[in-house]
Image (cartoon, rainbow, N blue to C red; front, side, top):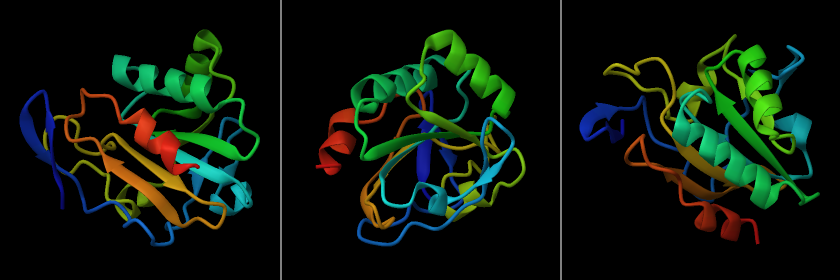
Length: 166
């Protein structure tokens, strides 16, 4: 269990992020066409997992736009924005914000992702959704970078995540 804060108030997650050097757990998440997808669907690419509480908040929207802008032109990288939002809401956000170079994935059918990655908030007003975190995986799903953002209202360290991609 990790402790983070929400506007300065302590809250807890269900566990810890996967360790750097470990193999990331597989997952089943739902894409915008309501298909179940897993890590295998992105085989051969480096992956940035931008885990956000909800795209309907300012910081989550900003981080999605930053990753879209800074990494959207790289053919060797896929940016996966993962949240509890429904795929319909994710698609509406991406359309309105022009974030067409990230792939949104929803936990609507299964919260195992949040538990397996240690980011499920277990108490406080946001219990049941994810903390803010960024993981960078290599082409073989080995964890190169992991950041659990200590304050939900803060943006992640974009430069560290991008540097981990090489």
